[in-house]
Length: 183
Image 1: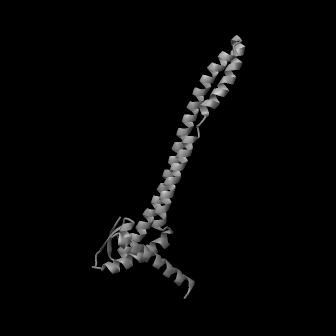
Image 2: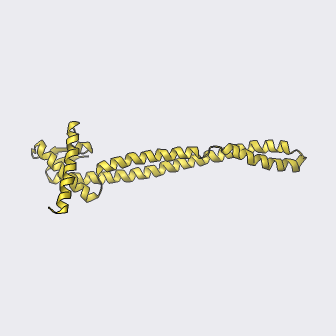
Image 3: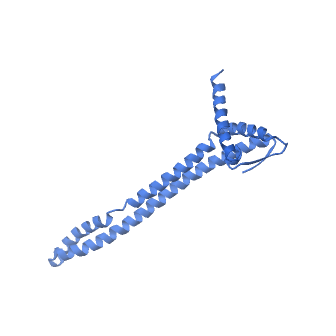
């Protein structure tokens, strides 16, 4: 047996196992990936199952993506996006204190020069520095969160496009085998 024949048998067995697992949930392979199939020529359930497995393999080979892998990828991308957003929220921690220190230093210098009271200048500078630093940190957090969300949405859109391409290829194959297909 040639290596590619063996590979086909392994792949077909994997699809058959996945299909058998879906049968226990009452869904066909096509329904699991949200493609709905009706036999126009009176094909039996067994024949439809075989045709779906064949078309699944054909579509996977032609578009280069397995829909089950894409589903896992989408879930992982969503999780990564949430992690990036959480990181963005942590980015501004301590900004007020750092701003207060910088403001106090600048205020002390200005207070000493203006009226020989470095303490009063430091207090005013600390307050102004803390407020300014918090505003900058809040804006930076918002921007970082929006950027993480934007990147996550772009990745999700790409994954969805790959899934749509798979469904189109899968549908074309089944239509050629005389099934009515909707997705």
